[in-house]
Length: 335
Image (cartoon, rainbow, N blue to C red; front, side, top):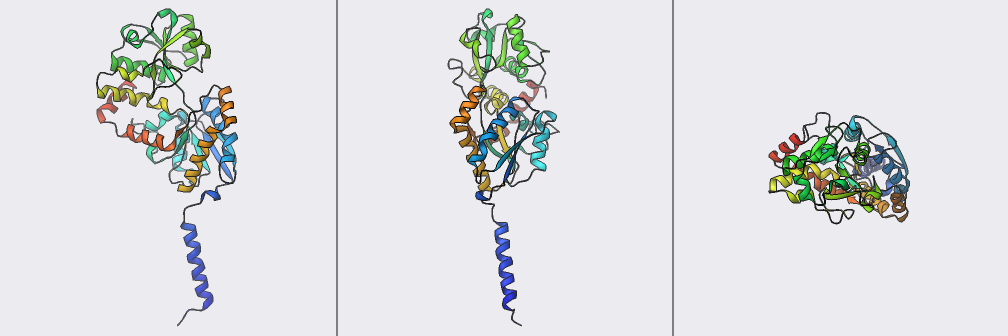
């Protein structure tokens, strides 16, 4: 028996509806509210950056959605990363900013990391934080070669702090003779210790922490820490340039990689392609905005954009590191 016209029409409409529902969500149908989750408490560098980005990002997204910044502190940023991976909506309405070092946790055997770092939707990094090994002027050290041969005192805080890990890496891989003085509560305390003459070196120095020190000749940055050289320290070589072989260089790059991506934004896996592109383009346009850059400069932030694709490529490189490189890095990092 032939189907009636109304029945055929209903079937056709159902087929069309199912096709539309299954199609990727177009960028122009962007959610009306975008939530940015910060993996740390209020007032820190990540929170400040997110609130600055939140003021500009909406106007560069389809439909100019309202942008809401929320703090989700816990477990050193892992709480936010785990939530984003496991529970966050995957429609482009929820993204996060949290520390880059977290995303090596699965590779380093971190049991609290419930995510595959390479499956996140990486959107981009809105700032860079150049770092170097700074030597106090009274030590009379001007080059990396001199630093590697002198038993200088270095300020550090906890075992997991980069200001502790970086000189430990230089000792283990390059044969430096730096002597760690730990127990300082953070980088600011370590820098105050340099002024008091308690230590002579701080590895992890940024020009934003003490903007006048370089101009006044109070410190000399003898080497840069990171994957690429930064214009903030034009005369300083990279630490890994002093590696004696390829494996040593890989170990140092593995440890220093996080310094290249200091304000990363990411979404959960599975955000539709059109919305991913909209978020990536919006973030890039935000960093290029002249008013954004003016505000960033007032906050001593260097608004250098790194694409989501480049962050993803860096993670692929790190996760492809030879087992012996990862094992040596874990030992240096106390893992």
